[in-house]
Amino acid sequence: MRTPRTALIIGAGVVGMASAYALARRGVAVTILDAMPGAGMGASYGNGRQLSYGYTDALASRDLLGKIPRLALGCDPAFRIYPRFDAVSIKWKLQFLRNCTERKFRQNSLNGLMLARKSRDAMAALLAKHDIEFGHRTAGKMLLFDNNAAFSRGRAIMYMKARHQERQMALTYDEATKIEPALNAVAHPVAGVIYSPTEQTGNAAVFADRLGDVVSREYGVSLRFNVVVTGIESDRNHAVVKMDSGDELQADIAIVCSGAAAGKLLRSTNIKAPIYPMKGYSFIAPATKASPQVSITDVVRKLVFTRIGDEMLIAGLADLGDDSADVRPERMADLIASAQAAFPEAADYRATRNHWSGLRPMTPNSLPIISRPSPTLAINAGHGMLGWTLAMGSGEKLAERIFAN
Image (cartoon, rainbow, N blue to C red; front, side, top):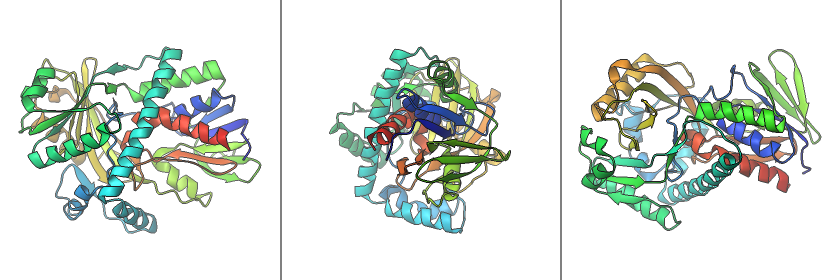
């Protein structure tokens, strides 16, 4: 396949911006299209803000398989499966179940780890070249386990990654509190902690916006917002992107980076990409004297606590099959109540703001689809809960694939 000289990227989140940066550096004339009024305003906006390069565990696992009946009945407030029986939903769920084996869990998690390393290196290279301010810092990350069985499983996964030179360590609760004293205020038992001292944080939405400034100013990328893409037509010579205004744009290649919307858009090209929405929620609250500096993930309750300056961003919940980005008040209340019950002094819960929900684009194996199914069409979508972590590496991998053909 020939190397494109022009590209239309659909989606201006962190993945779309990273893809634009990777291609524009290689001399491709890039135009980015997004339905929102600015960059990073979709799933990138309210995510957990953790660059979790070492925490790439696939969602599908034998552990989750045994919990699915309870989840389907709504017995776990952190994870809900909404009943849907359309062909797309059924096919995705069957593929997901086929990934719920130990062998596939390990394979998928390690493949994610390799991509995360590529992403970490690409982020370091970007920041060495361009001064981009987005609250970036090395905060470290702690995974909290509240029972011995879960902690034992966490250690087994840690040892698996250690064989691939990933730096993590298992700590007792007392050892962890010496590193992060805020853990003394955790309101439930902690059987053990997995600590990754080199993990990072940063505001994904600000990053997308600032990287947009860089690619526009330094590499001539054109940014077009408030543009709703309704379809793509492609043949061996060029791609045509159609918009709801009736306008059309043409380029050598169209690249779909539109997150949870990617599956539906790709179906207009007769490509079936297994991307399915899993809704998450977040809110911001003022930090307190007892707020952690280290990023915290409560594994059982699926809660993420990230400090950005004088604020805490708290994210969580996993609602599979809810394809509306609207905030459900009862689910936001579940998140706030769960966070306050688990970590009552982590934030000032009386002053929560930025109540947000967004759609994570999940694949059955928790790995993004980075492919070029035809000479004039490429895909970089399906990053699930790790879009922020994997964005830079995914952009590089996409560009390498395009330029290798």
